[in-house]
Length: 358
Image (cartoon, rainbow, N blue to C red):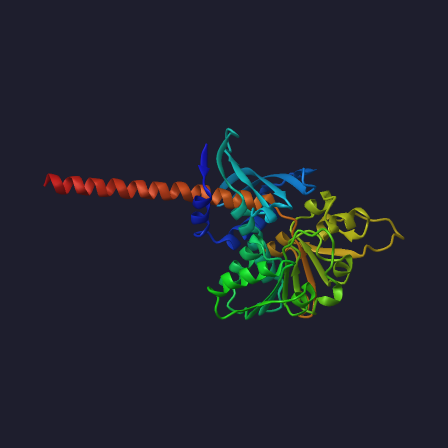
């Protein structure tokens, strides 16, 4: 079984358009060229009293004329940042489509951060009223950096970023790192999450909190909020939204921990149109109506923004199909590069031998 190191993954990711890959996966999902089972989650409390979990997220997707099957195993401990470790880490395993045997293992952290950022960026582009000029980012860890780096490379429209983290030094360090590269963007470390949200056209919370705090009245008309992390938004932020979009409804329906999943289980969320069943007369209307899945916007089955003033909340739960597809692209590119290198070496060797013989 091939093992790609972190350095291998980093080098290969630099040559892949992740936004294009996740778009292809959403189109495949709309065309029923995917298999997305429920994820499996193991949770425990460690000997330090910290929450830990292990997620196993399998998937199969057909893109580029190939079927790619595999799984992402991603583990996390909330105490890791205090130990100088990333909060989460794991591996992606790819399977041979014929024999089902594992054929490749690679580090999952960069793939997961990259594809998560790509989904957020794609969702923003599908739903904003105009290219974002200001971004509010809550949290300043590795996932926040992946989001900002991709967004600032892709969007020359951005003029200011408002950063907030409960550990101010973390936000300062992120601003300093990115400021050296993106000199035309004002990276402002603000004193509160509210300030980051109120001053932004695009809001992206990337935290580990399970306690909501983002109020509906913080979010300005026209804003797109991509709720990447767990429960940063209060229920009122969902109920006040003009549109709520998810990545995949089945993930929401199966969820028992995140806010939107809990609201669905209590009867407060209406599924997107193609997942609805007739309801009994006289029942109260749910507080939140999910307008569409992202794949519906990609395929054209649903329209996005209806008004420039709409407040839109996107709540991606995280589809393993994206991790598997990105890993499959890296696996393919790795062998394509090896084949090219071997061919070049062989040609050079033949040319050299011929010259010497002459």
